[in-house]
Each structure stands twice: as structure tokens, then as C-alpha cells.
Length: 70
Image 1 (cartoon, one colour):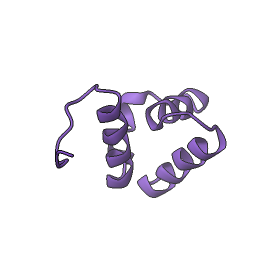
Image 2 (cartoon, helix red, strand yellow; image 1 turned 60 degrees about the vertical axis):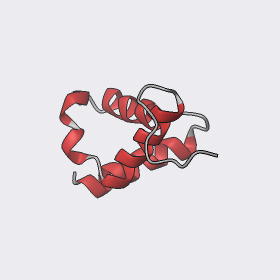
Image 3 (cartoon, one colour; image 1 turned 90 degrees about the horizontal axis):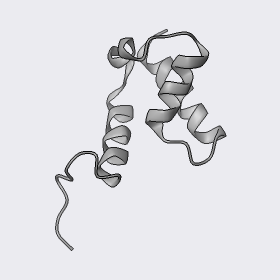
């Protein structure tokens, strides 16, 4: 499986299960397919990484950057 196919599978999980985060979708996919989550990092596309980063910033897991003050 290449990174584009992996990304499409994750997007499909997020769309089907309303309210699931991208990180949870990745973990769910890994669990269902007996894949070690630490091995999927090279398969993450830039778009998927950006979505995970935004979710982490919204949950205050990482500092928010690149946003203008309102």
C-alpha cells in the first residue's frame, strides 16, 4: 500500500464514523489490519499530517502557530 491509498482509507474511516479524529482513525485502521502504529509514519501524506496537526492544536496538545491574533 502506498501513502495515497493509506490516506484514502483514513479519510474514508473519518467520513464514515462521524466525530472520530484522524489520529483515532489511524489507530483504528492499524488495529483492524494488525499493523504496528509506529510503522505508518512514512505513509502519512502532507495533507494528513496537516489535519492531524490542526486537531492536536485545537486540543492544545501542541502550541498553536501561524495564526494571526483576532
